Image 1 (cartoon, rainbow, N blue to C red):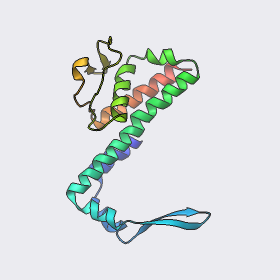
Image 2 (cartoon, rainbow, N blue to C red):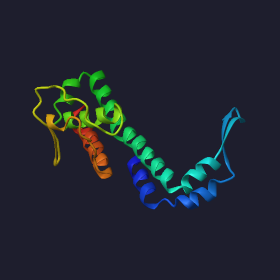
Image 3 (cartoon, rainbow, N blue to C red):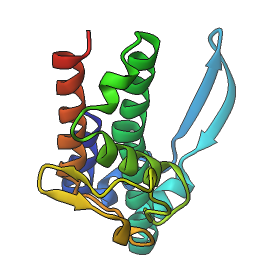
Image 4 (spheres, rainbow, N blue to C red):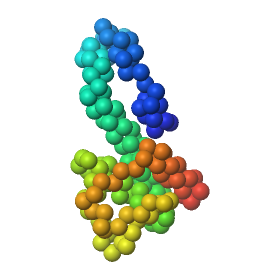
Length: 164
């Protein structure tokens, strides 16, 4: 669902309309019915109207959603597998190493660069039609938006079918 929101936002969001709707408004934080803090949305409206800044905002939103979609999903399944005594079984999933590299790349640093290859005796990490090798260290590890969704789908399919 998160990835779908991101895809729709990137393709269908009318940033100028959004800017006009939020201009002059504020976003309030409440505690027991009392506004304790308020954030004016004019700066966000200005940013949405500036094409260069809008692109940065869109890219940052995409990165946040990738984190939520792949990184956090991987961590949840990993924790569940470990806590239920199925950690080794999770590590035998055919796409485990590929998903782990994607998760690590999203989690550490910027620019989605594959920084290191572990374990060093691993020949390749594969998933669907994608293949990573030690030669990919230092290069960007970027998936298409739909691939992030498919990777999460495959992760959850493994969870539902293989982990009890």
